Length: 435
Image (tube, rainbow, N blue to C red; front, side, top):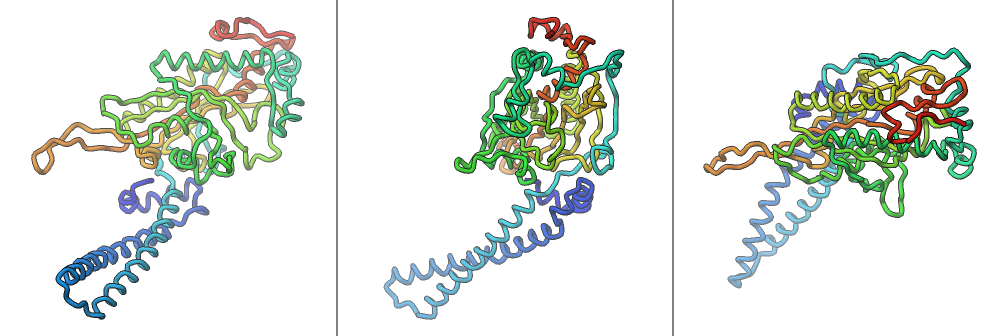
């Protein structure tokens, strides 16, 4: 969790973050502060009481050892000490559990560069690449193209998997795999370590990555096994580093994972129920980076992750824009986030396909991921290595099938065939997908 000492030193900044991020209905900062003060008060009472109990027990043992009779008042005094200590420790435990719950709900601070705003309509456009496609024919949407070319079975998918289910078929499967392999190979060649993380994870992993407690409604729970299906490889990639301490020279660490992802899409009832835009099951290549607790280095890595993703979109010849996400659209742990929105011409605009996030030490504190600083001389003259929590970052590389919406709509011709960009052809073995 965040450092309570840092919170106490920056109360008004956290109050501002709670308001601007939209957590004011979910967390009472004053209650958190009162609970912490109450816990500190109880701990201050428990310590001397525990010391007195131990002193009394030692005295009683010494009397028993000498064979002297023990006064009944001394016995009762010892029993009363035990009762008072037990009651106080129970109260402290209850208060501590409430304090920890409130701390788990506390949002991270934002960087000054984050624009004000309430939701994604207030995000600030930074730049664009590519020209939106203009058609001189009646362009088809991705559903019509997929059905015409045999790339997906929507009716069968819904019959088998219910609402928002789909099945890619034929060249649709091969196209998705080609896009993922292009992204994966691009990152591996840049030194990103490939990892296939668990898709079913414990609650602690979801909490550690910052997806719980606020994301529970969007997660699929396997209650019998006390596991959850992840909505992104980020959870596994970050949680795999839990309780580890890295040498400073090992940083930065760069990981890439390709996984199936699962999300309930809670809150999206009635929206985009047909097609490939908003689905419960999807495929994603994810980037995760771990850097020193240095904001300048973290921002440089944020830029690198963003450029990796935009480079892949450019290889796929898909127009996009980059937006700075406003405060009200940030997640609990995010200090800074840029979204990439890819143009979908028939759908009618730019739509989010990537999120590039800097979380500071938010995840690292929850998962206890540290690194050793250079050794320094301790009070007794010996050298010791101080430890710090790392900073973590993540960004999508590609996520399908949503990206297929943009791909099909942008690369169609007047006959309904799909042109394959030159850099993707070696992965697919086709120049066109035609009926």
